[in-house]
Each structure stands twice: as C-alpha cells, then as structure tokens.
Image 1 (cartoon, rainbow, N blue to C red):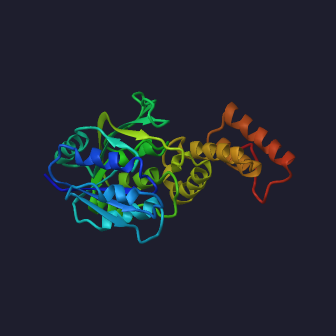
Image 2: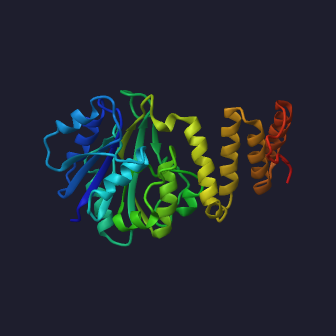
Image 3: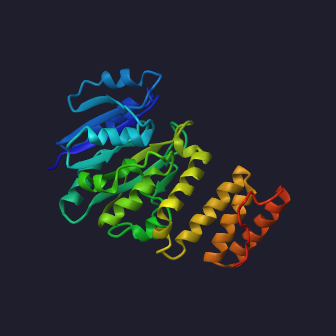
Length: 302
C-alpha cells in the first residue's frame, strides 16, 4: 500500500469544506494524508478545518501565487507521498473511491487513474449528470489522448496520479482560472496509459460562485489552451475544429463578433460542412454589422 496525499484547495468554503474533508478521511484506504490549503479565505473556513481532530489532516496557507492552481501546487510540494489525489472543498468522495483506484494502480503500468463523477447543479439537489457519460465515445482508458483532445472529462477530484508524473508535467498552470483539469490531463496523458474506474465515486456539488460557472474565465482558458496545445489537438481528427467552434460560441456570447467570426472561419476551414460554413458566413456578416473586424481575419469560406 503506497501513501496517497490528498490536496484540498479552499477559499470561503466554511459551509462545505468540513463535509468534503470528512468524506476523504472516511475512506477505507489505510495510508493517506490530507493537506488542506487555504487560499485567503475571509470566512470561517480555516476554523472549520482546524476543528477537525484527525492527525492525518494538515492545514496550510497558500503563500502564492493565489488561485486554486497555486494552492494545489503548494499542497503537493508540502508532501512526499508517491501518489497524489485531489478533492474540491465543496464536493464529496463516496466510500471506496480511493481503495478502488489504488487497486487499479497496483496492477502496474498506469501513470494515473480516475473515476466517474455525478454532478449536482444546485446544493441539495440530486445528481443531474454523469461525467463521463455512459455513452462517451472514448477511449476512456489506456491512451486517452484521442478522447481528451475532443474535450474534458477527467475532473481533478476524480484523479489519482504519480507524483513524478505530476512533477514532470510541471504541475497546474497558475495562469488558468478554468479548465485547469483538462489542461493538466493533456500533459499527464502524454506520459503513459491512464486507468478508469467506471463508477460515480465523486459527487460534484456546484456552488453559485464556482469557477466552472464563469463564462469569462472559461473563454480565457480555452484561448490559452489553444495557444499551448494547438499542435497536439491538430493530431486528432476534428479536435482542433471543435475547439475553434467552442471559441466561436464563447466569443459570440461575450459579444465579440469579430473574434467569433474568426474562430468560426477556422472551424469551417478545418472541418467544412453545411453547418460550419453557414455559421462562419453568418458570424462574418454579424461582425461587419457590429462595426469591423477588430484587427482579426474573418474570412469564413475555406
């Protein structure tokens, strides 16, 4: 049994962090430690954590850079465990989660393991969705890069990975405020095969101030991922076109018609078809009506 360090970043989560940490400490895996890293909370988060009387829990403060990625990186650096896992301060691990993942990793050959997750959109409501969905096209195990290139389906709190792989990947990107799990997995999955436990062993409870809900942060993250991983996405059929299509939608919702037209044009060039061409032409017309191209090319037709 190898030691697992579970890192829990938290900021202003006094109402949920106690239950989140308790669900980790209640796991039936014998050799684990929990490192909770407070990222400048202004409520009673730290007091809730310090009231938990369990020697396996340590409470740290994030010295910077601020943000969830900096807090996670600091928590990893504070432990020497050979395996690293993550929990969010408002989510729950179900019984047996860590044991089942470590059993798969004990088989050897995998650099990481993840499990399925159920998503509850509102506190107190039943789980509304399953990630990855039962009909997800995959591959969900082994070389998962072809599936990851199409989109994110490995959430951080479902993940256990080797410390040396995390270090070699460079840790979490502190310049991202969203999609940090997807960006990390695009790097981790290049190191070797990934195991999948096909059971919803995590419950994600969406909060009103969850970063996942921020359209602005998500759009900025998608742009950064394109800059960093565009060449990787281009290796897999349709992946780069899909990413440009998402960016077109994000910029359209943000009211930046010129940027939306640019990315729709790129998607149409990469994957021409009636839908992509029609969207590109329509957005290009909207960009012209909105008053110019803002310095970007918006030629929609390949």
